[in-house]
Image (cartoon, rainbow, N blue to C red):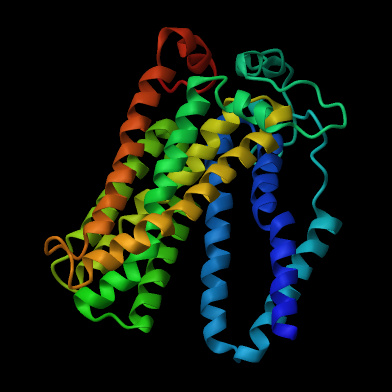
Length: 352
């Protein structure tokens, strides 16, 4: 009885909290951090999230099963109390395009010389109709995503990369068990290694590289690493190869923060939440679609009725989905560096 009540409550809470919390966190960071530092800030946010996931996984190994849910609920409540007590509201329509006024990553003082140079990205950013107490409609969201080549490309990259990423997660355990006899403990160790690599990459490597190469190049590097990571799983010839493949998560961890940064820079201060929410929605749709595609495909190629001998075929298909997103990302960089946007980018990001 209590078990089913718990899951009903969890589903209801998840509808309002799980997806929206990440979007609101990204929108808050976008409000408080200047555009040139936003990629590093998004990377730090993702790294802290990965650190929390890693810490929770490790802690769960030492807790009694009966205490796991109580500890998780207590930590969630502590996070809500901290948010209410210590995190100030960013305020509506606040945008820290001026690097000298960046309160998280710069000094608190703002120079008058730089305040006069307003961001031309804000003038070119797509806009939703003024908020009048009515929630934006799906057509407004579609119009926002199709209002620029950068947003459209980011949406397509998110879909194909998330499809490949969740397809890999769907098939990997069954594939490794059939191919190398992995147990659930070995698979858990592999996940811990991958989580640790992603956390270290986002907390240390990305903040260093982001100001140097820019988020567009980081996205390309991350997707290239993601392709290598997935393809190595698919053609693994020994039980140690998956552990080597997991090391490429150091690069693929750049993908999501880089996409979020591109989206954040392509919309105005009033559209941060809805734009990030649209990207999260696309990722969630891909996560629903992936098991429907990759579960039967994996089962087929691990069965006796497989058309040919290739146990990692479903993982290779996931790799090709990631490869499609990589190709789109290279094209997006060419378009962003085109004549129509070169002046704006040269002034504020110096990426081209």
